[in-house]
Length: 367
Ligand SMILES: *Cc1c(COP(=O)(O)O)cnc(C)c1O
Image (tube, rainbow, N blue to C red; front, side, top):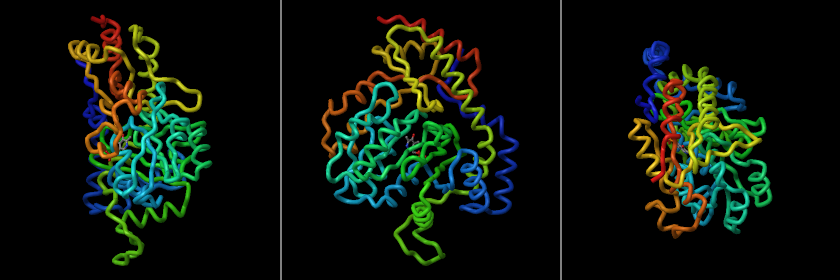
C-alpha cells in the first residue's frame, strides 16, 4: 500500500466546486489585490481563531519581514531565534540588517529552550523570534518572562501552528506580533502564496498596514519606507472556503497522532513530547530514532513516504557561515536534525494507510 508523505490533491478535490465558484466571483469582480475577499478573510480568520484584527500578506515570510521592520531592528542589533526551524524564521532579521543569534532547543518539543534563550542575551539583544514548530506551542510563560526582564520585542512565528493555543490564548497574541503562512503545505494552505500578520497592539497593526502597501495610507503619499506585502484576492477567496474546515482537519491530524503515539512500539523511537500547556496542531509528526536513515530506507521499501524536517540547522546553513557558529554549537538541535523523521499526517490519510505506516514502522529491525 502506498502512503505518500503528503497529498494535497485530495483536500482540493473535496472543495473544488466551492473553491472554483469563489475564484470565479473574485475574477469576475476583478478583486485581484487586497479588496473584499481579503477583508472578509482577515475578519473571518480573526473571529474564528481569536485575534482582535489581522492583516493578509503575500507569504509567510512577508509578515516576519514586516514584524522585524515594525520592531525597528537594524544594524548592530541582535535578535535571537531557534536554529531548528525553517530558514524563513531568520530572514526578517537579516533583511533589516540585524544579526541572527541562535539559542538551542529543548529535546521534547523541539522549541526554543527558555534558559538557553536567556543565556544568549547580550546588551545588543533587541528581540526574539519564537517558533511554534510543527504546531507545538513553545514555553511562552518562561519566554515572555525572559523577554520582559530584558525588554525584548517578541515575534511569534506561527506558520506551522494555526489554531494552536497556549494555556487558552491563541498563539501569536502573547508576544508583540504573530505571523502565519498559508503556503499550500501548511495546515491552512492557499492555492499559492499567502500569510497573515496579527498583533494585539493597534499601533503596531497600523504601522504594518502602511508598510504592507508601500508605506502608504493615502495613494502616492509615502510616510514610511514600506514594500509590497499585499495578499491577493484569489488566495483570500480560496482561504475563505477552507477556513471553516480547519477545526475538523486539525482534529483529524490530532487523531492520527494519537494512533501513532498509542501504537508505535519500535524500540529506540522517541516520540515528540506531550505538554500540559497547549496541544499541538500537528503540522508535522516528527520522531527521532538513532538509525534514522536505515529506518527511512525501510519505510521507503514499504512505500511509506517520510521527510527530513529539518536536516540542517540554521547555524550550519551556508548562507549563515559568516555568523561563525561551528558544528557542535547547539548540540540538541544538531542531534535532532541528525535523527529526526517526519511521518505522513495529512488529514485525508485513510485508516488503512495509518495501519500500514504503524505496521511498517514496528516491523523495522535495526541492522
Ligand atoms: C513556512 C514557514 C515560513 C514561511 O512561510 P512562506 O509562506 O513559505 O514564506 C516561516 N516560518 C516557518 C516556521 C515556516 O514553516
